Image 1 (cartoon, rainbow, N blue to C red):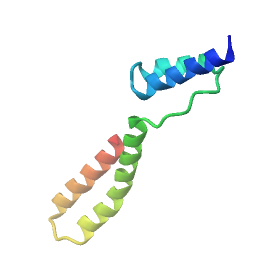
Image 2 (image 1 turned 45 degrees about the horizontal axis):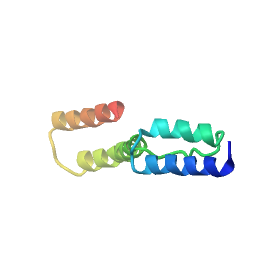
Image 3 (image 1 turned 90 degrees about the horizontal axis):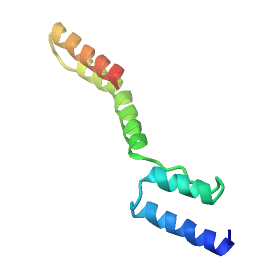
Length: 93
């Protein structure tokens, strides 16, 4: 295939991906096909952003639990309920 024609096709596929005219998976496949595996850039998706956010949130549960339990005067059963809630939330996260 002509090099100029291949570059034009690659630019069109990148335009489609940027403007969401085709799904990302299709564009990645076409880019990999026309660039022979060299034109696909790894994308940071929403899933990566959400998982990073939840990892930070879960790591903050330990200091929050410490502050709430030791610096407030609550009944023992309420303290245990709060710790159980934070632990379960951390496990599910």
